Image (cartoon, rainbow, N blue to C red; front, side, top):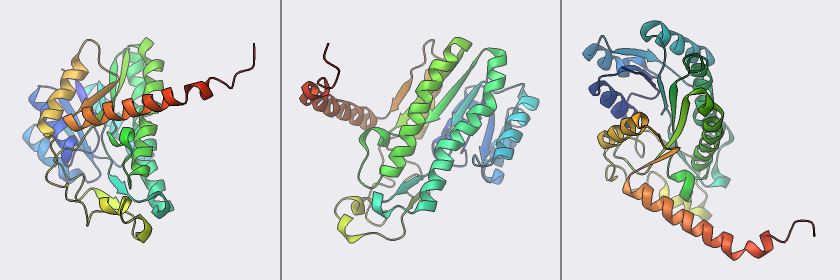
Length: 276
């Protein structure tokens, strides 16, 4: 039996992950900024769930949650850094404070929880760290530059982390979902307050008032959760797990476009070394 610490369990993929892990027979430290929103999980599974308040931007709360997990279950075997939210704005529209908070949550929040569980994982020479990214990190849609940037940062950090901890028996992996039928494009989506008219036909089309995606996303959160458990428990967990046909298609299209560009400019790229 493994113990999973999952951030952002109130709704969406985080909730689906927690429910699937419990159905699988493992223990869950279910967290949300408002602990009341995960209390039902503890009530339904009193022996297997520790429901706690966690704001990943709060150092003291992160430390306290990991300590409580260790005291209740003996340690964290799997950390799932899922907490987060969307932010849409053309780059010029982005508000400094909102962007800083976005980075604080997605990037530094992920680093904060990861650093908190690593001492225990290193001591046991085992563990898995799962960091939620997005296909947006790969395709960078108009209006999602800031969100794509935080997820790209998470992916780069995770790849380095994977290389650092592999010799210690620890795995680090990225999950890159496409569109899933959650609150992500609804309640959880924020955006710049003041749109600029010149971006109406690019970033503007993806503002909440113009977006028709919410509630029609193709992805099933329950199936995503089952896939995550399978990947975590596999003998060779992937560095990157794509979830959804749209994620797989988008990733391949972006990769082919990038490779075409590399090929087009390869001669110039190779012209910058010192002559032998």
